[in-house]
Length: 422
Image 1 (tube, rainbow, N blue to C red):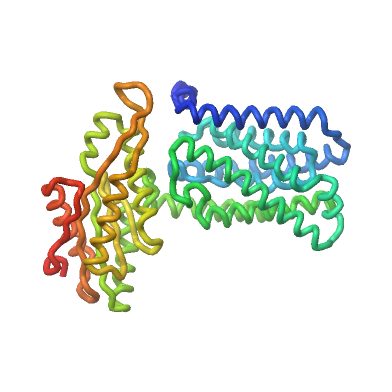
Image 2 (cartoon, rainbow, N blue to C red):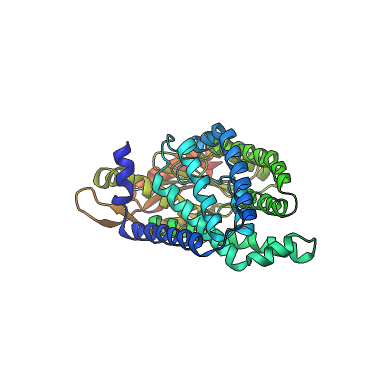
């Protein structure tokens, strides 16, 4: 396992290695320049010590929760750690070099004490994350001058809130851009929620950064009052853990769509709503064509990449309130509330064309280098009017239509007869 971990970055595409190397190197240079050129006072060292003490205490006490969040998290899921509370405060009130030292200390503690033994957590990713946070902290210190920040934090004026709000926005934008750059470089363009985070992710992130702003004010006015932030951080972390557990129970790990059980529950609720509103409902069953050939030719990792690409295409093309999930293997399902047969066929055809146009980059098993692969999918459509829609009947009818699409040459859409669906 350790050999695999060490070779993962080396085996990555050159553009990924170049991005990681540039960001890491820039962070190291900023750390060195900050320590050499910036004047450090006794007050600065005291504030650094308090931030390191509170941050280290929190990380030590919450080790078990942090490990649980990492263990239950889906692959490629965004994990928001609460160290931003102290990192943002350090970016506002500390000299740049000391702010970078604080980041190194906190992320080093996380790696050594919590993440090192968790499967799936890679050292080069942790280093990249730490480097990105150092750059984000540097951005805050550039946009919010240190002297002005100290002056405004020591008085209660509107400029104080404006300064802290600006620090929060700059930190979030800088960090999000670096994370998005890593995703685009390694996996290509994805849907906005993958690049920018979901609404829930950003709500937790901004709550964490707001606590960081409170910590910064406390350090300037009443330093030891900053300890009162710890209970709020623990509650926020337990909330994040609960959210991660719910996601692990309802989301398919490979595609980040709903799993079969969660999709069925949501689909049943939508059918009930359609009955009350007297609207028709449609179900699509989407099956990737010749998926076994991709696994056999390029390996199972390439197959997982293809699954994720198709899942992203479905999530992009369907409406937010359409229930879409992975039913198993290479088969996906979507329930379209308020859609009659004509509308469902149009949606199915649009999905088929989008999947056909999707290009997947995979590492060749027999030939070196990255190869471009295209996939196709067959779609079965079934719809039923209100009061006549039963989920199992709709699934059965859509599956029969999918069977006809497969035998009709693949990469096509077939519709179940309305009588069968009803």
